Amino acid sequence: MLVPVDDYREGILAGIEPLAPIALPLADSHGCVLAEDVVAPWPLPSFDNSSMDGYAVLVSDIAGASEVSPVTLTVIDDVPAGFRADIPVTAGNAVRIMTGAPMPPGAECVVPVEKTDGGTETVQIREPVDAGAYIRRAGEDVIVGDTVVKAGTLLSARHLAVIAAVGKGHLVVHPRPRVAVLSTGSELVEPGTPLTKGMISDSNSFLLVAAANEAGAQAYRVPPVKDDGDAFAAAISDQLHRADLILTSGGVSMGAYDTVKEVFTEMGTVEFTKVAMHPGMPQGHGFVGESEGERIPVITLPGNPVSSFISFQNFVRPVIHKLRGLPGDDRPRIVAEITKAMDSQQPKRQFARGRFLADGRVEPVGGGQGSHVIGGLAQSDCLIVIPEGVAHVNAGDKVDVIDLRGDIR
Ligand code: AMP
Ligand code: MG
Image (cartoon, rainbow, N blue to C red; front, side, top):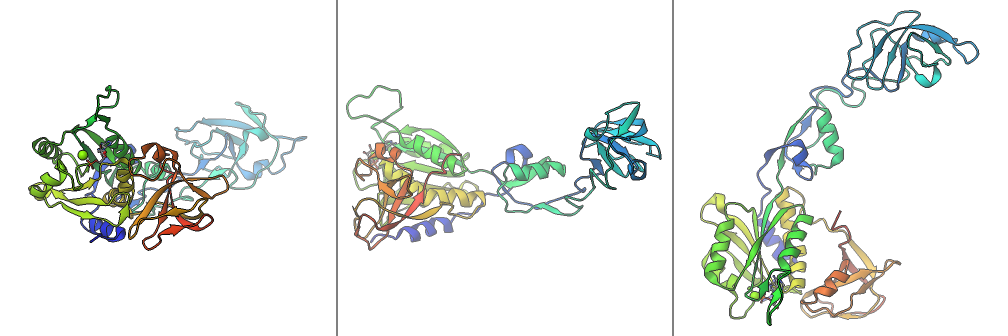
């Protein structure tokens, strides 16, 4: 009995809760989901200040100023940004002021330096300005008690700026999940090692670490383990105190030496399922760890690289998002015209690799749709989804497409 893709994903997500919030320094909370409202303890701007380099003056003093008959005022103080302005502006006087400096008492407007001769002892004003001109008023942006960023917000540069401006140095956020990636297979060697017969480079762990990081995790690679139950069990136990999610690759099909399946039959509560999808039919998920604190979710991905990638997109990416405190699925889906006919194995949902053409149509990538076709995966920038019950699409048909172009930003 094959389990539908959506049911399988919902089943995994049902057991996942957002990671418990922790306090992080502001800079480290970039890309995390805020778990508290940030409320302004002071207004923004927090004091009346100048929006220009110029002169703080009384409006009545400069009302008649013009190019041909400038008004001359005495410069009684000089206020750069970061300094106090204590000397009041009175009739006939001006205070030289820089952008961001506090307005001196009594001043009614700022005349930008461009409308003056720029003098430091006396200044000639060549143009009048209105009352209030070039003054940024306290609280015109944010008032005390305003919520500047709401709990649940995914923190970007824009949010960090206002949070810093209201003086918060630490934030309570859902942390990025720590994701351990563990490849299994006696055939695997490290990239860079010359291949002897029967051996291949471990590519899945690199794929999965990168995909997990692209989903907002802090993923790391555990060195691949051979198809040996004790070695695999030991490698999993090692991760229990450091990972929020464990991903394995390989060893979950029906063959002999399918170590992951064998070990997880004894260890934890991992269940193995056949999902109605191609590629990526053999799947497993559950929890490992003795105590509640060590109850770590595990997702066992199939070994074929394309299966692993597509399984990741369908099942792991939504889990990482949920751990981060985000809604599960964020992939943009588009309807596009397909350029070639395709068949789809029934009763499965097919995820074929495709590439967008400049005109917005999508073509299946060359090299066939086998689950080992890793070269083809690199040529693709989208997944063409052919739903259950559709055995064939014709060239020119509209198909659902999962856009992968935003993966790396
Ligand atoms: P398995 O799921 O372990 O039966 O593996 C299925 C296929 O995927 C085999 O051809 C494996 O050699 C290949 N494979 C398994 N793990 C990896 C990996 N980490 N990197 C690249 N290929 C792999
Ligand atoms: Mg294997």
